[in-house]
Length: 58
Image 1 (spheres, one colour):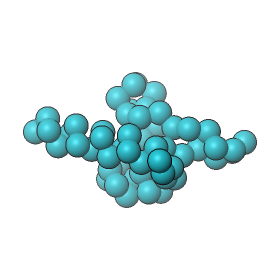
Image 2 (tube, rainbow, N blue to C red; image 1 turned 60 degrees about the vertical axis):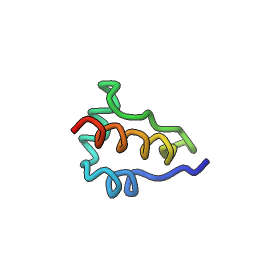
Image 3 (cartoon, helix red, strand yellow; image 1 turned 90 degrees about the vertical axis):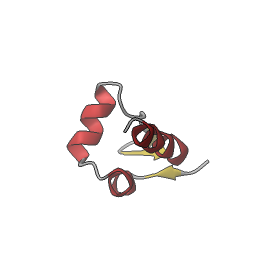
Image 4 (cartoon, rainbow, N blue to C red; image 1 turned 30 degrees about the vertical axis):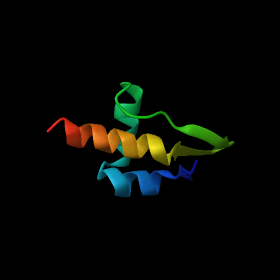
């Protein structure tokens, strides 16, 4: 299992920082994992699954 930082999530999804957090707060995007006092990351598999889901909806 690999954790990825916001910069990589934004590159993979083409979403802005605000869009990532907005969709996460709305329950439409995978939740982040706290990895330190001031640091979060996302599980890469969950982001990849979210992208696949979006592709399958078209």
